[in-house]
Image (cartoon, rainbow, N blue to C red):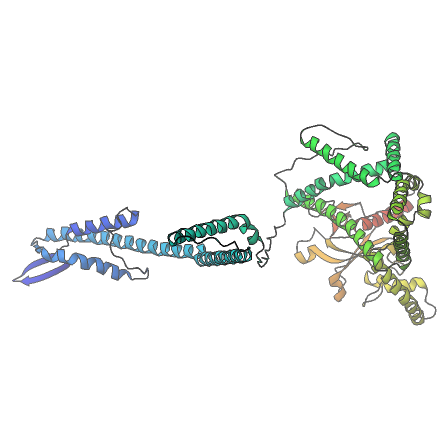
Length: 600
């Protein structure tokens, strides 16, 4: 759009070139098709493929397409001033619509760019190349199989006996004979492939694929469910062992007597193995009937049904934490028992306890020589009789008389005498300490000056680089820590009367003397003793176990002590040996109070 001014003889002439509205409306219609993705894609404008194209290029392209229609029209002239204002308003509205067109074009280009990116990602995710490679691999395998089948058929045809010569026939019949032979060979080849092709394919050597299973993340619900599954899966085995123990203990006299008579009769006639096989078949038959809906319950020991708690869906943080702790405790105990059994078996065969392994060694030699000399029928008879007497009589006597078992039950004594790996480690550490202790005692006696008593020496042992124990807390010389807390209990003092974070929580050691409760701050070891705390046991008005964080399960790891000098009770938290410290403080406090007021 152009606006020209012409000054002639004091008259102002305005020449205006206005674009026709039809071209702009046509452009908006096409843009609406692009924006709303109409079905006719051929009517779209040819936009640049790259979204990085400048906005001016797009607008120039549109203007170039509309210029021929502008030049074909005549110029409109309006000599009046009011006409120019109307034209200017029309020009502004047209410019706004062109800006809107520009925005639609930018949106269309961006959508095109995003669609191209999505198409590229989809092509990358489909992995067309890998599928093509697998297809080519399968084709090559098929060709190899067909080649092997043809070789097998050729070899069989060569190995087949020659047929007797036939009489010469007319040359016209030779062509039909060849065709019949070819059809027979083709049918035979297809029959062999249908019959034995699958079996030949099974003998093809293929490299093993190492698949790594994805590990599941830790979940309290999953852990609890796995423990319940393990318990349910082990229940048949535990019930079987309980029934055997009940037979051996003669819980039901009639049942144990009948089982003893039947077993000894079978062992005497050499039917022990058939008896066990018959019992296994009987158990499977009963299980089949139970699976079919029959109600058959037979057990020497009455089953105790444990109450099944329904799983809770909405659990608090403390309940989830407590649930994980319970499951972890059960898993810890189970793994500990299994580890003890495996370590004892390993130490039995590794001569860790030579006197025990020597008995097993001699027993194996005796069994080997007996198996070489004695016939197997006699060996089976002897083993069967001994197993029955051992199970029904000897074990019953040993379980009923524990003292007799501790003296004469050789397998029981051997098993209990076998050490585990932690026990071996403790023994080795104890032997090292026994070797070091005489040397240390001699050196300590040599360094103690003459005239110093044992109590003075023990009080010096609690001193630090600053001095003795009573110097640290400004106490009398006879105030020393009790034997229970000679090294102190590590904890943190929480003084809720203070507002500064440095004074609110202090880490240190807690000691108990005959009359005082002393807290040595870790920062006081650098040279300042102002942060140490000394409390008289007589001044204590209240002492109780305390739980610092109510969110965590359990009774906590803190001790709350109230005194008249503090508005809020002092808390000694994060104490591992909390119960031991509480019992010591409470016992010493009651001892002092009873001596001070014997009537109370």
